[in-house]
Length: 377
Image (tube, rainbow, N blue to C red):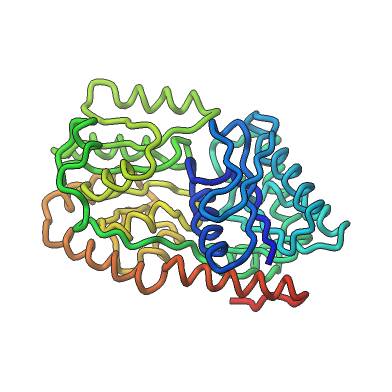
């Protein structure tokens, strides 16, 4: 099959969950003999590859502003894909849903991965928030196939728009902490000791709630250090707020980390905390469980769906106080931390294998390429 994967910043992954998803899916599909094209944003990469691990890369420009970057690049990507006669057109991000009208004009079918309730993110205000809410309705009406990465999102589209979706979760690669090098360079670079820090990894945007974790960590008086991994464009005010909260503390802010540095830093933490309040499957949560980490998450329905009995949680109703309580409890309970680490690995192996995810996408894409509707899950 000729498969076009559009809407993300591109691969190799160097920003967020969608990029990681596309990299994992594209490389596996290419290894199975499919001709896969991923569209990269020119301004996001210093080196413009033509191929990556068997995947064809097409680098295109975009209007590199907060509100137009994604949609402008997705439009150019779709036009290129249409001109090159792809068989499968797959796109991420609900804000790209108006492009489904274009695929319909050309008699093609669009697969759209909608993620969570994008309009609810704090970084969007005014017209942008209204536009993204409108895009949900457009997706429900015009996208040929909607992918929901959690049952929560699937139920949301059914309840609000009476629209059936296909449930396909993200995956993760098992990479247990027990196999990590004992003294990786990334720890020395940031002055950290194995097992002696609490980890946060996410884009540094308001809805990911790094501020909640910082405040809870301070309230709990945790003896272990706090490490914040991540960054984000277009949110200087929030970055300044985090910097202010970190003043006078020994909190470590690393900026973006990927590859070995990300894996090694993750596999030596005491525990991983996900304070984000927006529903939807977080690939980073699956990553951390696949590392065999003890995970502590806000008790949103999607987070609880992912962890099952393989993680700990704190209340969405009073997040700072509840998180502080759980941080203190896990800080002193080696037995529970060890139990949750083992359960995390077991749960990922049973439910979130990238090979299994790729199998399901391959089946769906094959049905679409043959002109059939995908089976609902």
